[in-house]
Length: 199
Image (cartoon, rainbow, N blue to C red; front, top):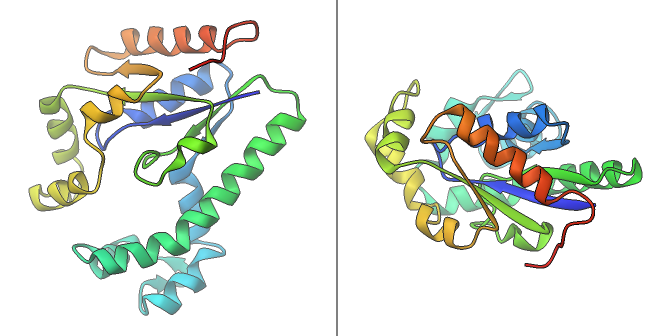
């Protein structure tokens, strides 16, 4: 079984691309969805213990948590120290389950794949990209997003050009849905049994 890591900077269209893999019948593990589950489950008491007042009725309040960690590298590192191992275990369980079911290909949707050193967890890497202006437009259109927040997020992410340089595959979402879908189908075909796995 081949494990494909799917990543990309904020606003590049990674979630849309992940859905395209699902539509092609490829199982996808969504790290963001895993975090949502963990925030209302095992992670909640751990986060409340470290960041008091961020959990409401047993569920992490993302707005309160953001206020507690934004612009504070030590707090962000502490939060990541709680969340990342839990997400990784969730992903490992997903891979093991699909391997046992005889799947040929699975996707791990990992927003911070390069930033967290996740390259060793995957066989191949697909990077989702878009022109810088398109990225900015998409991100600043999100509710509650500001230039300051956007800059803080970008500062913590490996630059898009570096991600593309290190990718095995690139999906450009800047030209619309159909070219992106064609790129996804090409990746699925390339990673089908019988194709080489060598980098």
